[in-house]
Image (tube, rainbow, N blue to C red; front, top):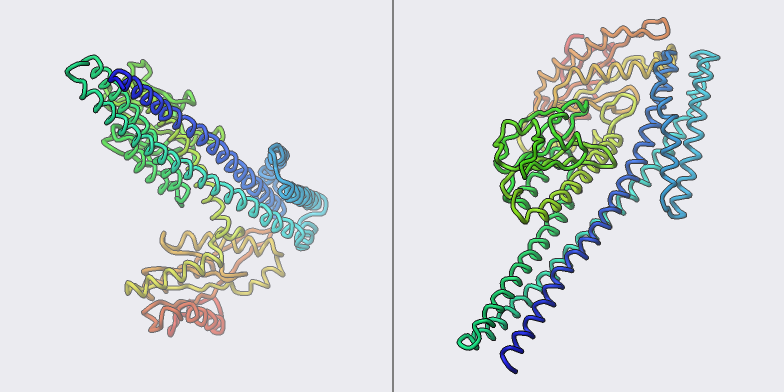
Length: 560
C-alpha cells in the first residue's frame, strides 16, 4: 500500500477515534444531568415531608400556648400552618407516586385532617369553656396519638426517599466509572494511532515532507482531544467524589471544608471562598476558602452582584460591575461569583479569582464551575435537612433538652473517654420535689410550664460542653465531662438555689418548686466510671430521704 494511502487511512481512523472521544463525554454528561435532576426531586420531596412535620409541630405548640395563656398572638404559628399545609399536601400528590406511597399519603392526609380538627376543637373549647375545659380535652391524649402516628409515617417516607437518593448516587458513581473506562480505552487507541501515523510518516520523510506535516498536525489534534477527554473524565470523577463526600457530611462546617478541599483540587489555577447566610439572613459569613484567597469574613448581600441578579456574575473581561466585596482585592485579577441556589432559595454564594478565568478556552471551565456549585448547593441543603431531622430525634419536644436516647449514647462515649484519658467526669441527677402535687394543683399545663422553666435554668447554668437531658418525667440529668466532684457540687447547689427561687405566674396563681439533686464524679467519689449514674441516683434518693430541696454528693451532704 502506498504511503499516501496509508496516511489517508490513518487520518480516517484518527478522525473516527476523535469523534468517539468527543461524543462520549457529552452523552455521559446528559446521563449525569438526568441523575442530578432525580436527586433534586428526591431531596425536594424529603424537604416537603420535613416541612409538613415542622408545621404540624409548630401548630401544636401554638395551640398549647394559647390554651395556657389565652392570648390570641400565640395562635400565629397555628394560623400560618393552616395557610401553608393545603398547598404542601397538594404538592406531595402532584408528582408521579407509587400505589404504596399513595396509600401512605392517604393515611397522612387523614391523620393531618384529624389533628387539625382536634386542634380547632381544643381552641374552640378554650374560647367557649375556658382553660379547665380545654385541659380536660387535652388530657384525653387524642392529639398526642395523632402526632405520634404522623411522625412515624412521615419519618418512614423520609427514610425511603433517602434510600432512593443513595441509589441515585450509586448510579452517578457508575457513570463516572464508565467514563473513566471509555477515556482509558480511547487514550490507548489514540496512542496506537499516533505511533502508526508517526511510523508511516517517518518512512517517507525524505520523499513526502507534506505527508509528515499532515501527520504531525493530526497527532497534535489527537493529543489535544485526548487531553480534553482526560480533563473531562477527571472532572466527572472529581465531581462524583465531591458529591459522595458531601452526602456523608454531618454539619454545615464539615460540608464547607469538603467544598474547599475539592474546589482547590479540581480548580488548581483559582483561589476562592464560600459564603453562607446567617440564620438572620442579614449578612453572609465566609465558611471556607482555598488558595491565596483574601476575601472578607463578613459581607452584606448587596455587596455581591451575583446575589442581586440571582445568577452567576463575571468580570473577567473588563465588566463594569465589580462586586463590593472584591474592592479590596487585585482589580486586575478576574473574578467569578456563583450563587448557591436550591429549590429557588439562595443560601449563599461561591466567589473564584484567578487569571485562568480570562483564558480564551475558559468557557468549558466556567460551565464546570456552575455544575460544581449546583452540586454543592444541593448537598448543603441536604445536610441542613439531615441536621434538622437528627435534632428532632434526640431533643425532648417539651423541654428542648436532650432526650434519654441521646443521654445513653453520650454517656457511653464520655465514660470511655474519661477512663482512657484519666480525666474526671461528673453526673448530676435532678428530681423536682412533689411534682405530682404540682400536676394535681395546676394541671399538666402547669407542670409543663415548670419543666420548661427548670430546663431553661439548666441550659443557663451549665458549661458549653455539658449535656443537660430529660431522663424521664420530672427527672433530669446533666453530664459534666472534665469536671471534678467539688466543682460539680458547687454547680448543683447553684442549680438548686435557682429552682427554689422560681416564682411563675400561672392562671392568677404563683407556682413555686424545689428540687433534690444527687452528685457523683469519677474518680473523685472512689467509684468506677460504670457505676457513676447509679451512685448519682442513690445520692438523689438520699436527698429525698433527708427532707428534699438539697444536694447530696456521693458520701457527703452539701447544705441546702
